[in-house]
Length: 329
Image (cartoon, rainbow, N blue to C red; front, side, top):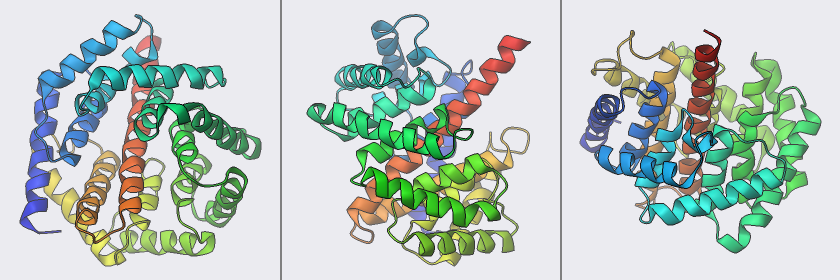
């Protein structure tokens, strides 16, 4: 992880985070860091003007109380700003959003990102089928875990809908993973999110053992990725085709480097969020290697989508919590 290109990417992320923070100071800090991460994943300097233009585009196409304008809107604006055709991408996303609502998904920040993922990753003539598959996955999860399944599962339901995984066998595999992993972790909700990531791997029992081995490797270094908000990151990292020592070293070195950067001190960002971002940056580094043929293209695409989905989901949850706290004060 010490190669110069990776160090340069970490420096770029730190710079992007400061730039977005300064230019969107009134927006949610975690969502701003997501925007910075999205640009860093593309090895680009954050373009605040492009993000602002996309945000204005969102306002032009939506009403005042639309979920598209909610706390996590800057994250969506950043995604759109990286698109070659922002307006078409937004219009397509709005169309998918309406299909999702027709399927009885409830409007929320999470549903906005779910709609975006579907709009970006499939053709318009496949939107309805993908939404129906997402709904089938969601209802299957809710039938098995009614108290765990909610709006925070929308984004991963969309990713599962986009996958080629048969619904019933996918749900069965997720349940096998849940049964294997739940005794090891405290939060049932986080374990469910973890299974949504891991279902992309074929062998359920082998996958569970990989996750537990990686957890233990992190624990041995004093890093806890088995907490509520970082558990799905453990799943993402377990998908990477490399030895655990390299993964742990990468996350540890990334974390330590970022802690020294402006805006990433103990008073600015929690340990768990910084671990989340560190894991994402390590994953993106391996995606870059995939482009050189080191990792399969399909896996790299999955990892990219999963990381975006995971980060957006957690940012949306944080934004919703902040909004709720503000309204009750």
